[in-house]
Structure formats: structure tokens, C-alpha cells
Length: 112
Ligand code: HEC
Image (cartoon, rainbow, N blue to C red; front, side, top):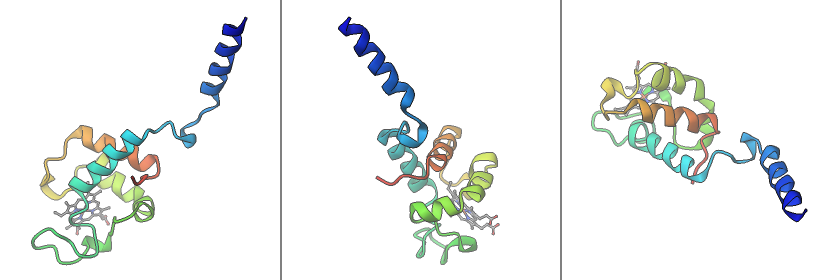
């Protein structure tokens, strides 16, 4: 009967977990953060690194999880639902990267 008790315990442990308790894995967080860093961070920071961009575009600074969460809706509109960002898809962002970015923001833009 021990196996039965163990099975019940492990099933209980599985069903007790929710998205808020960390089902979104560290590996996913790394991928999300990378998608953002490679495609957005060089322009949307206090001192943009992109040649010709001298201030954060439209004042949108996305340099920490709090800022990213605050702009989550605009990010979704510009980089997930539409492809307005990055401008002219200058970084060749793929549809898959856009989904990864969306999931990362939905999970609260966890930093590593
Ligand atoms: C090459 C520089 C550059 C990159 C890379 C870039 N942006 Fe932008 N972003 C801009 C510029 C320029 C504007 C202002 C566009 C305008 O005036 O209409 C802007 C505007 C925005 C806005 C504000 C839109 C609004 O309606 O107020 C958001 C949100 C945004 N970008 C998110 C992102 C996200 C998310 C990424 C990455 C997926 C990204 N941007 C990558 C240059 C960039």
C-alpha cells in the first residue's frame, strides 16, 4: 500500500501547483529575458545604445521588471499583436520570439 500513498501524495503535489507558484520555469524566464534583451533593450533604456536613438523612444524605458510590467499592454500591442516593434523588424525578431516575449511578460517579466 505504500506505493498508493506515494502516488496520492505526488498527485496532490501536482494539482496544488498553480502558475503563480512557479510553473513558469527558470529556463523559460531566461529565454524570455533574452528575447527582450536582444530585440528591445538597446533602444528602450535611459541611454540607448542604438545609433541615432538618443533618448528612450516615447519615453518608454524597459530596463527592469517593474517598468516592463507597467508597459505590458503597450508591449503586447506593439510587439506581439502587431509587429510595429522593433521598428522595421530591424532585429529579425521571429514569431516564436514574440510568443516567448508575451509569455515572459504574462509571467511578470522575471529577472534572472
Ligand atoms: C531600433 C530601436 C528600437 C527597438 C530595437 C525597439 N523599439 Fe520600441 N520604439 C522605438 C521608437 C523609435 C519608438 C517610437 C515610435 C513612434 O514614435 O511611433 C518606439 C516605441 C515603442 C513603444 C511605445 C508605443 C506607443 O504607442 O506609445 C513601445 C511599448 C515599444 N516601443 C516597445 C518595444 C518592444 C517591446 C521592443 C522589442 C520587441 C522594442 N520596442 C524595440 C524604437 C525601438
